[in-house]
Length: 425
Image 1 (cartoon, one colour):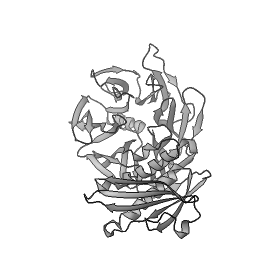
Image 2 (image 1 turned 120 degrees about the horizontal axis):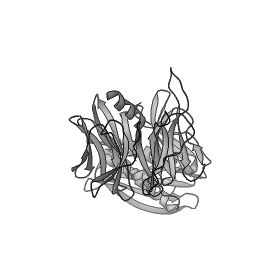
Image 3 (image 1 turned 90 degrees about the horizontal axis):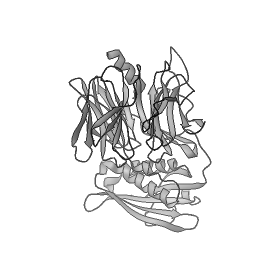
Image 4 (image 1 turned 45 degrees about the horizontal axis):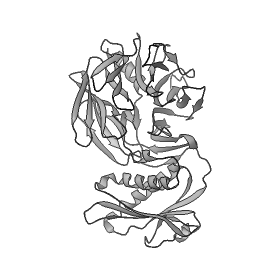
């Protein structure tokens, strides 16, 4: 039974040891058309250690927008001036900010977004946040608003949490929420073995996770604001929530009450469940696709892990193979009719293998490779389906990666968060 559980865990998620300090690396690039620089106008002494970190977040976020050529000049400025400092005088845009604590001790930021070539203010705004530890979200919100000004695709995912489980010691793990750069992190669940966190909906107020109680996996739902825990389901074998329907009323569960894991559909309102697969091997990690009418899942029914699909709403019980490339396709994520999956592309017995991410469509022969080297795992679509978060392990360094699909750009943030078990965005 222990060997089976190990094999199942390997199919569900590949745990990677993560280390390194926060930074950003552009891996692929396209031509940028607008030059921009950030200028720091903060003057209060109590902010002098925080302001350089805030500056770095703004520069990183502007870079991830992909249509700016960000000049990292590190320029200090007088916030009241509406023009650029000397080093930035020929750039297209300037973002000035002044960071300070207001009379109620809220961390606040005044910003000016300036069209430097036309010499006019595009907009002036004030921001504040009660918990100063959450300052990364203040920076992310500023850049998301700049993006909105240009009328391009939303990047609201900048302001969203990621959630992950990380091991702290043998048979113990905790669940953590963070901003996408992992600059801000807060532990929500600790003590015991806590695995497979999954957001309950797009508001990110609640999440599901599995906790082992008396060696039995138990599915809980937790409210991140109140800390309230609701017990959903308990079973023998294994139990993991891999996806939630768009209306939040149905869960896709991997369960193994009789030893072999299969996919189940659980109705939150009626508390009833329906078995969707019944295979003698391993079926795990299901996701909704095509308007929640079908699912994808990982199965070893070909003798190795691969990606399959089936309908869950009609009478058609047939299973369709989706991926014909690779011999070990062991994790996937979906958005509407698009699927991103990780595939092993080498077979080295004495060194690390290469796992690359690929993007496919369920209604065409579209296939696109998204990474080129290293071990790339845990792919997760953003809420708008235009970006992908993943974990990359390459040359003894692990990073959190962001792929901007439409722009053909990737960004890496070296990590120092411990051994990740699973992650959701």
